[in-house]
Length: 165
Image (cartoon, rainbow, N blue to C red; front, side):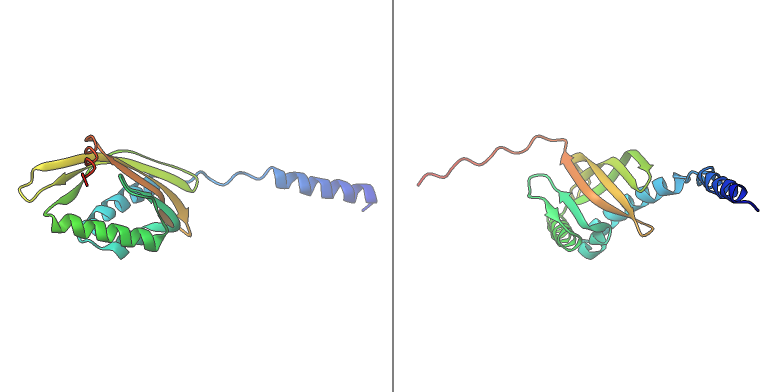
């Protein structure tokens, strides 16, 4: 084989590598279903005041942004915060119920889900309702919360008047 034929063969091999078919598009139906299942799990863990269970749904560097409170960063801190919050909710005779999923989507290794919730008292009366938005990242084959925020549909209570001294 002459030098020019070898060069031509090498160029043909290199060119054919650039023409390889792209990998097939991933079916995101299962990913969307997993995000919805994780939202249901979150509410189940909350009902049991299972802070570690909730914490395991979050990435190590996740950020939780609860209403009326400072942000909480990290799986352990989020698990502790949510476990304590759920225990206080339960002790007050209240429960938080998952409402309707209002949206869910996936793009590559990022996903999000939004929905509604209600807070009910022991008689079943609604005492609060609101919405949530959670952003997830696919990490080592597992969807984990990386940002999580929720808010009440009701106006915040007015700040207490300063005490007279």
